[in-house]
Image (cartoon, rainbow, N blue to C red):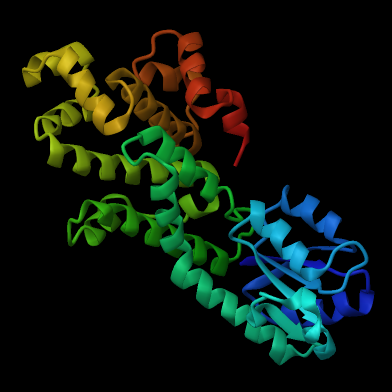
Length: 329
């Protein structure tokens, strides 16, 4: 479901918008505020998809409000409610009329905007996400790409347990995964990914598992990319998957540790050791969430003989303690 914020100091306008919006099961009212300042403060704290606001407000007009919102929140759609006479105001210069709802407010007018948002969101959101990511992030930096995508995942509403919301999250994840995998210019990968890294109900219900799933997608993408560039890495990554020590990996693959380090720096922008730790931490998250293993058991199963060292590594990659992670969702 998509979250909606209503901005107006007139209760009648908020009530009219609320009644019409709530008739569409794909949208829900996240909050209602009186002023643009309250709206901006809330937008910076909460996950808001759409804002319906009056155009003429005491402290800020609609054009300025849109500019402020878009500066920090490019994905948010703002619709402005106004009288037809206000269309001749100079403040309306350069405003897309698709963002305008003329008073009086009717169900048909509001529903038209909601459908417009859904269409734009489904068709372009994931495309824009990957395109923007390519512009802003070094695509040979595993951790940077992972961080970028997990921040996007934080926008999903995991508290909403309705089936429609879970379907929307699943479709969004599937679309993002396909676009990332296709960056390797390899065809017929989508079905393979869907089979090897399925999106379960648990994943679309828990942000921790969702981020873990994204790690696996990125691991797949980077593995395909790096082995195309350096075929020798295929066996290296295979041995890493089997939890074989780095010294044994070097020995079995007949590669010097220095050369291997240079390849990983080039393809992943991290050391082999860091990648192995990162991979283990994501396995640890699965053990904690899905199998409810104790932290000491998780550490031991992943080859960390000291609980304290495992906790230190976990916090380095997750920016929170293992205990904090276990309690989160």
